[in-house]
Image 1 (cartoon, rainbow, N blue to C red):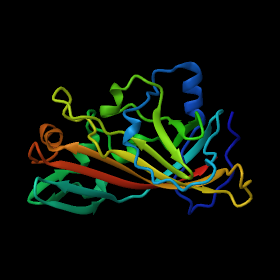
Image 2: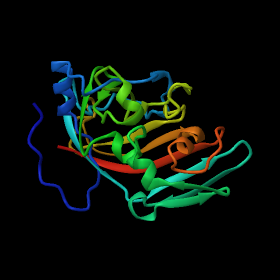
Image 3: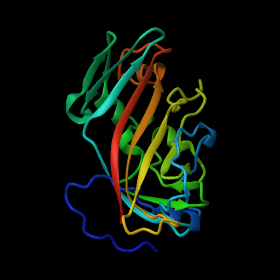
Amino acid sequence: MPACPRSRSPHRMATLSLGLLALCLLTGAGECPLTTDPSQSGGDGTGGPAVDIGGSSGAVWELTYASQVRVTLRSKTQTASTTAQPGTDGAVSLLGRTIDLTTLCWRTDVVCPDQVLTTHTSLVQSSSDRFLVGFNRKGPLAALTQQGLVGTLQGAALSVPMGMNASKADPCTLVVGSVINATATVASDSDPQAPRAEEMSGLVTLRYSGQCVALGGSGALYDDDQLELALQFSGSRL
């Protein structure tokens, strides 16, 4: 079992929680599904020994998200971005289209960046270059039947791909480009031959088709538009 949390200074942000996923893996609980296509990994890698981000027994990380989400709208010919705070800013306008973020993130068929991973998220390192991370079964992630999202680890770089092929049966499928990327920070007193991560920072990026946004009444987008929501987080190992 992971150790009890240490006290953290208030300015520290997000941490990924891992012990919960370890429990899911042991019990086979259906509440913690597994992934999409690991070949979509976007990690850059840092070389050297793989960093311990949880170990085979798992670890719990605590996450804190930034308050501003980066909103990007891609049409066939143009791309535009802005930042917004979904709970207060509500509607944003890009390329002459309007997207209501508050309505979008409340929908049961959609998951927003701060809803993918819980505040305390479980992470289990299944090998030197693979790990499993617990997540919320919300929106397009609710249909997954496996026990955790599969991530790849290259040095201190983590990547969890979530993009799938678009589906007419489910217009709110997360499309290719949806990914969690993070970089772990090794503890200063860690063994160089077995580096142990204590902190990490990352970005959750989700992409939806314009059809998904428009069908739910969350914005006047065209079917071939693509909406991207990106949110930064930071984490500390508990």
